Length: 214
Ligand code: ADP
Ligand code: ZN
Image (cartoon, rainbow, N blue to C red; front, side, top):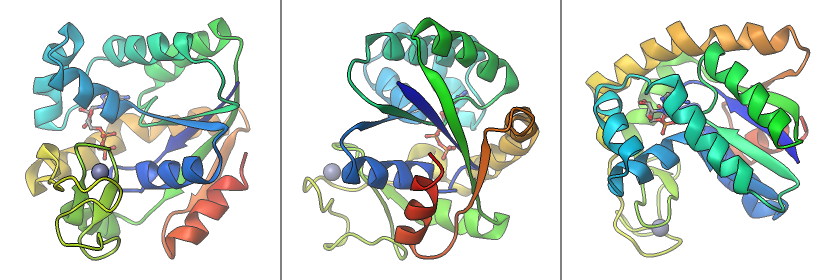
């Protein structure tokens, strides 16, 4: 199994790009650390109860917590040719934990795709983001509107604003990205696996640019 890491700020489009890549190629599998955590919070697992307060504040959950969730999931994965990791790793410590997990699974890291998006666009994307809690599909009120206002195209579910997409928490998440995740760019650049992809413009073109990197 090849591992492809999607790196980028909150609102950079990691989840949207991953969703479209998987829709076009069933040998890919998408794992979002944010979705894993939100699911754990909803199910009130021990990890979810611990993670909830951090997520509400827009802070990162402890490295070991998320690394364990991802490692457990990767150990069970059978089948995908490529695993798209979205939202993990986000710190250098997590990247080191992921190295061990990749080795344990007999997998290999094939690319780190950095979605490059200017800050002022990020703020607008986060403010307009809507998600379908039922199926995980993502929308944006003006950029990717659903066919019927407030209703998921894919499953008919009611669209919601994510709790941590309010302006205050979103600002904190962007600051956390700068402080804790940006150092990963250099970490992976030094290994020669970093691929920069322009994350603005028509979505189909962004997806195609990302697809060509691995
Ligand atoms: P975004 O990237 O748009 O901020 P995510 O859905 O990826 O949103 O993450 C939401 C929240 O979940 C983060 O603000 C953080 O609290 C937590 N989280 C997700 N992934 C990680 C991670 N790899 N390490 C620590 N915390 C994480
Ligand atoms: Zn849906």
